[in-house]
Structures are given as C-alpha cells and as structure tokens.
Image (cartoon, rainbow, N blue to C red; front, side, top):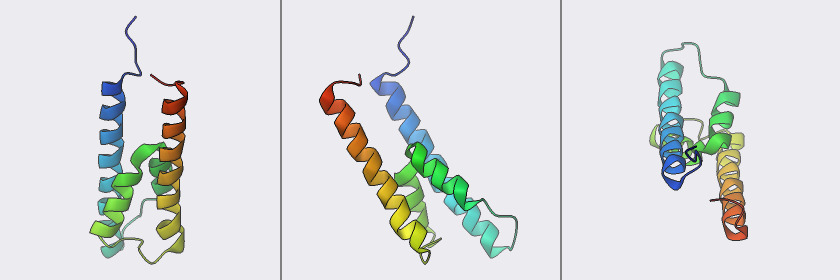
Length: 97
C-alpha cells in the first residue's frame, strides 16, 4: 500500500490550503464591500488552523481585510506560530516521516 503522508503530499496539501486561505479572504472582502452574505470568521480560523495561516495572513494584508480586528491581528499569526513549533517538534523527534 502506498504511503499517504509523503513530503510531496504534505507540500501539495499546504500549498492548496494556503491558496484556499488567501482566496477566502479575497472573497470575504469582496462580499463585505457589496454588503453580501459573509464567510463566517470561524471558517477563516478553521482554515488557518488546518495549515492555511500563511495564505490567510497574506490575504488579510493584501486585501486590507480584518486588519482592525485584534482577534485576527493576533490570532492568525499565533495559530501559525504554534503550527510551526508543533511541526518542528514532530520533525525533530522523528515522529513524522
């Protein structure tokens, strides 16, 4: 049986989830401008927590969206930092790959 959690698959996943994170910030900004139904903030945090922190943070500042909300200014980078620390821990301990 083929291994699922290969370096290649992890990289593909991370690229995809970060593109999704970037796009949801763009979509939500457009909807905010047009006074349309918005993407729930919880969804943005979930995408970030699933590994999309770079994309959501890049989208936040590229589109100047949610940049005045303290929960996003602190929360998104904090989630990203915790994910990086966790990944480093697992890689260094040999528990992954």
